Image (cartoon, rainbow, N blue to C red; front, side):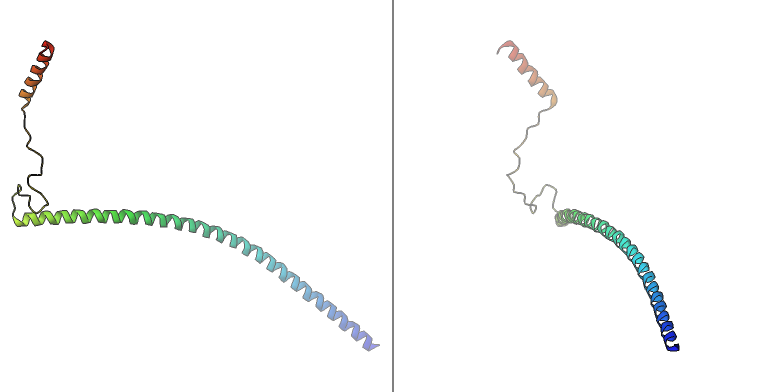
Length: 138
C-alpha cells in the first residue's frame, strides 16, 4: 500500500506542480499582453509623431527651395552690379571725360535727335496766340 500511497502523493505533487506552473505561465502571459498593449499605444504615438515630422520636413524642403531660388536671384543681381561697377571703375581709371562714351557700347550719332528748349514764357504766349486765332476764325 505504501507504493500506492506514494504514487498518489507523487501524482498530487505533480498535479499541484503543474497547476502552479500553469498559474505562473498565465500570469506571465497576462503581463505580456499588458506590455503588448502599451507597446502598441507607444507605437501609434511614434507613428503619428513621425508623420508630423515628415510634414514639417517637406515644408522645410519647400522653404529651402524657395530660399535657394531667391539666393540665386540675388547672386545674379550682385554679379550684374559688380560687372557694372567694374566697368565704371575701368572707365574712370582710363581718365575719360564724362562726355566720352566710347567703351560703353555707345555709338555716336544714334542717340536722340537734338531737342529744342522753349522757355515757359514763350510757350504760354504761343498757346494764347493760337487760341486767339482759333476764336477769331483764322
